[in-house]
Image (cartoon, rainbow, N blue to C red):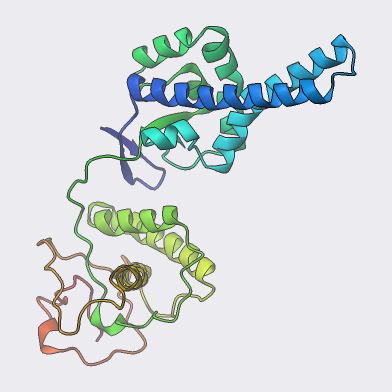
Length: 302
């Protein structure tokens, strides 16, 4: 397990891919690329038989560069680090900080890969991967990337406190289709670990994530609602919609959700001053304050 720490002091637990799985993924990618190269070459030879030998050689070199060099670069850029071989093996290329790669990362990896994979038959890449603590080849070192495993055993997740009762159903009309999976993952990671963060850092992170979610949903967060509470309520709304899609109508009437694991209460108020929501429905008996906080971990409305 490799623990990467982002600039916002959030630890990302990533599992670096080791040599066997990476070698298999590269082999699958090379088989697909060679098959495409042979098919395109045969088609070109049949359609350019009237050209002289020099022109045919130039076309063959251009096809080689485009298919075996430009192809992997384009695929990794468009798929954000998931080529066909990596998808089959459950791998993905990410940045050193755990974020998705861009064109420049794929370009550096592809150009250096020509030398360490194609020209040396993978010998240099194998040696570099064995020597590296995180299994990185030379292209990964220069590009600032890391190949990680996406399909890993499911581990117990951190406690995700539910939103306070005064936000129940508040965001049922939001359009959440434009919010990418990566942002949902960041929200989940923040809510699960915000109790371990410095209050000021946690508040800043929550405000940034809330602004990103609000920008993608097209509706600003309500005034007076703490950003962490807004994130928890929107995340619960997304989970409720997924449950309705999965079970064809949602949770049966009267069903009681599974109890969440016990965890110390986490305050979602500002580190500087408590923020009181503008509208506060009556709190039911089951949400009686416990030491100044509701059972959800939020500071209840005044």
